[in-house]
Length: 357
Image 1: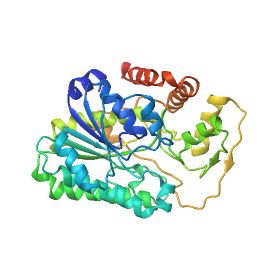
Image 2: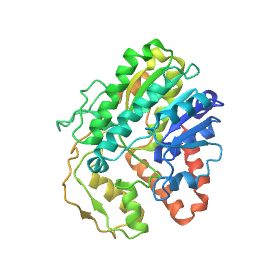
Image 3: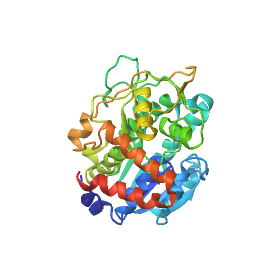
């Protein structure tokens, strides 16, 4: 779906984004702002050290921001009632596997109870057309059999984060089958692969760790170097979310349900493959990697089958593995060398992406 069709649909639509100051949330705000949507954002009050650095840098003055915890059910309901969104993208989450081991209770509360709060707050909203809830490709029961998971694969989770996302998926299905079937609200979940791109400053994520290694001379610690992941550019994922938002709002019966969004190329990189390719393109051969001890369980092999999204939504990821690295590096170079130009450059990247879809 090209940018004109997105603009035709989203212009003047009231869109609520939870987690709007995060990595994907900020890019989604930029996409929708360009399309002329009226954006309402709900997030935790920003920490200047994390992804808020990206959100702040692109000056999204048209976004109506509210700050609070997704666990604050009363505040969430009040914001939804007052602003009457047409569509909701629920991105707010505790999204790190390592952090989930340190704070399992927080992880389950944020990812499961937070999702329940969204669903409860929305079930009687008459103006609302659709809710899209971001879970994860890690929601599947991964027995390390080196197979691609489809939307019908068994849910599970071998760590607190993955288990919380599997529980969120089950929760959404129960709400859809038992409660939302009585409404005209579309309800879908999106399960994306490992997303990279400019603007990610999260802790314990591979690309931000590389950038900190270069800019702040921090030691580059690599966990699970041989782990195999479905890496993809953030634009490919968000174009899928936006495409689903259009179709779900127009035909909630046909398009409700879960969707995988993974890369189209078959040669998924291991962690160390990605690190080497990224560093060689960014700084050449002069770098040193330190391997950390593997003391927390993470999946060694993860891949997802996106045939449903490709056939039912006509979604296509655009960027190859080399292009996603190139575009990510281009963004960080501008941010490092001339941060005042990053707002303009971010918008240019969006326009370039959609120019020949």
